Image (tube, rainbow, N blue to C red):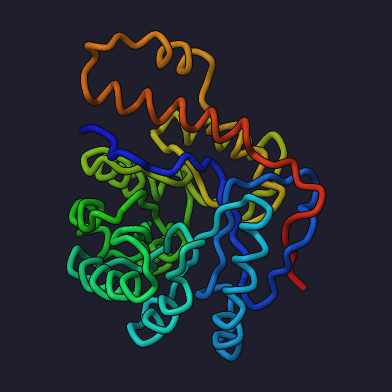
Length: 288
């Protein structure tokens, strides 16, 4: 399947709880391509309203420093609607749709997002979706979810939540089947599979994490979210285009297949994006 045109070139996306996030220097040379302002699991219920109210100021702070912003929204419909009212804005590149359960779920959210885009003077489709498959029922619909919205740019698996529901440990072996289905569903839909083999909850930076990223790349993943700042540089290095890939992309003949042409354009775009990645001296966030 051919990659969709215009897919984002991110390699690393760092989660930040929106109720405690601050736009400050990134620690340890951490240089994520984007931040994910979280309104879901990392935010206590009592802090949800405050987290939503901070989205605007945080988005302005990060985008002023050249870093892209996405927002992870809640699953209950009333909360998702409240989240989207704050998240749909010109500076926000997309939303992570938690516990995606099927194509109709994405269609419903897509209709609401379209109405918000019209009111904000944004082009229809401005806000990209990244569905998160986190339940057994969602896994059974993963192919439909991956292809379920023209807004879809990527798809990821919530391995810890899925493993918890299935009463199994979240590990490389136990989640291998689900991860393989995700990669195949993403490729068939022309979008990007995000993630790692196994679970990253216990990983920080270092050689073990870099080995995990390398294995995940070999498995078919193309980018990943990071739970800790220490993981970002490992994800950037592991998911960056390799020299042989770039050489192939530059040498691709004009009569190459549409699939190869789309892949080459995306690889070269990712390399250009990495070259522009800011080295922050006055920019990133920590939690308080």
